[in-house]
Image (cartoon, one colour):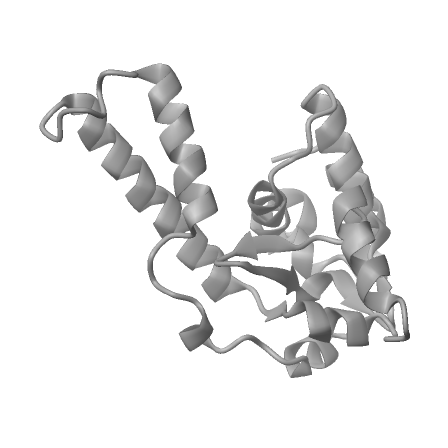
Length: 184
């Protein structure tokens, strides 16, 4: 399985502009404007400096997640799921439902390869989406948060990340437990 995933195409790093995605930056901007509406008007204010720090930390986190994972484009994900005439619209509908994980970045949807195997998606991807939605009182969870959840190393999995155990039978029960309880 590991060999198969590592052989899947990966987006070249040059396709990822180094500047943080505008959507992510706007979210940080909204959060800070709610917390300190006057703080962003003066570039010397502590609020503005915190804002710049939050953007820098978000960019570092994004870059780390991009470095630690392999991704498919929408077209490649559609092929991975078997292709077909309606595969693209079915794939995008699955992303909206949460049964397929895709992170938005610079106008693209990037599909982490760990969720795919033999023309199917791990059911734990959709389960985590649903569990997180319940915890957020019906709000859609942030896909970058879900990617982070799958990327964190866990003692219960012998120090491995959930993304590395999705298709391993010996970790099936522990993986299910982690997702159902959204254990960090």
